[in-house]
Length: 310
Image (tube, rainbow, N blue to C red; front, side, top):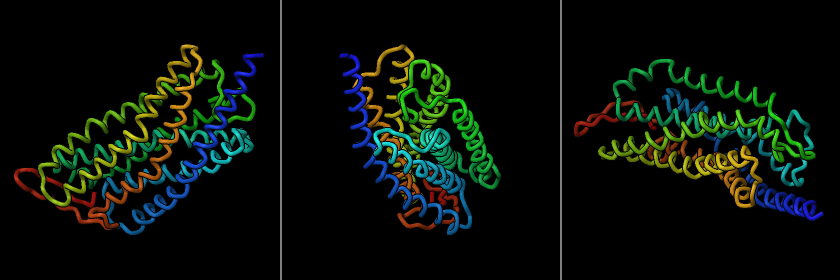
């Protein structure tokens, strides 16, 4: 009887945190995210004629954010209804997969932007040769193909829940064992490695362009700091907490209150990237105006820089 009472108290505690944490945050993300990402897609698709590699990656990042925002109304309704999913198993699989896949797709395209800026800053001649090829389109297509394939497999094979009408929550120990290969692979290859690239490459680029004293270099540094901030604030805490949580579940250790609360908080932080990404798009246009500068190669004090609005 005591165990049943404890389970009921823990469950009610879970519902309370989910309702009062996720509902207001997801609602704000949905409202401001739609405004920012729709505006970015309109500008970068219809207003910019000659698109740089970074512009193309930004368009793909905005598309990934829009897919994530598509799933949010379902999650908001879910948490408002005390974790009671009423839209059926198919919609649970679709929206749940899109919700979590956004983490890996977004960070993949941020990594693409990172590598693009790294080459443009440290190897400008190589960058000028590559930007006239189809490499950017091929990389973007590869990201979507790999991500789409992984999403499809996950959508068809993953368990939903073993508790009532919950969606992607309340997994049993056996279900966590079935989920382990997907979780470990996505964590390593979809999260930790891309994050490492961003956290290593971007400081190198920032240090190099700090030697260039012009408005283009200052704008590039702001973009670098914006991506670093998004990675450190939105993604890295979730990766770390998810890793700890995954290890505890694989060891048959019961989830404690601290990890439970941290998981909820970091999941809310992840959703904020859809609000912060439009700030990155805003910086990307240069001089804080939604316009694009022409590509030019400058040489100053022996250091080359490329300016294309990003």
